Image 1 (cartoon, helix red, strand yellow):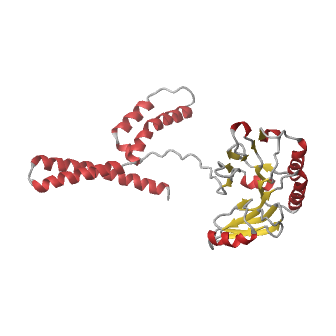
Image 2 (tube, one colour):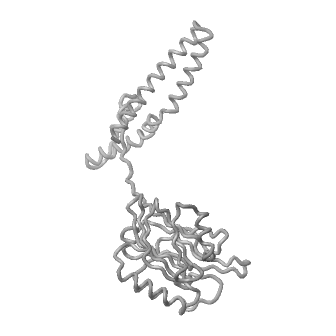
Image 3 (cartoon, rainbow, N blue to C red):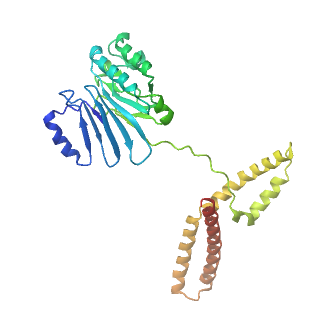
Length: 324
């Protein structure tokens, strides 16, 4: 986690650390700047972080997740407000890039827009304020990570006629990042009480699952409805090659059988109802032991319960073999 513009003086750092607890490790940049502009925080039990460079506008580190294979180089950025003061950060990023052969992500508050469309209202956009950022991104080969959520990342929160919005907080990566983590997304959340919108990147790689193949439950083969549907569909005339006709009929049969499959695959509720009904009948029999109607009802429920319990067991057997 990168915290920018904490507004915590040097003497207050230890107090804040104590409040966060012993499970957090915190690295600050007070050596490079008196105000301590960037804090990097992590839990050593979950993440391994190695600080490689600190400056007045960046903290560069290597990150490895202990619970997965995720690892990358991360640079947290908090640029100065003026073009002249920001020049050093572009030098630092170019220097880091010369030795970079792994996924690298640069994120934080750059205090500058990248294109004229990144600001609404406010001062007129000048090419000079964007040029250094544009040149650096192009020279290094950095690209913007796919964004989700809010369109802008900063607002002055003034009244509507004086309210400004800008996109000055960025999450950008190098070619190695996109080669390995192209599916990861940067989420821009609502700003809350801050004037900046927080950025969250989930490192959980999305798994692409293929659709499950259709599997007919064997218990349906003994049902009359299945036999009738098979005969009806197989009598249909399908023009074309014989193998095409067979595939077409099987598809039609699959559509009909899918609902039957769904019914026998979820029998828990039906069995629960039957057990409840059996219990109610037997409780009445406790009061009237030789009531012929209750005896007949008990036998009927037992037969039905045995039937569906047997079907349920065979379905579960087939499922367990399919996923063994």
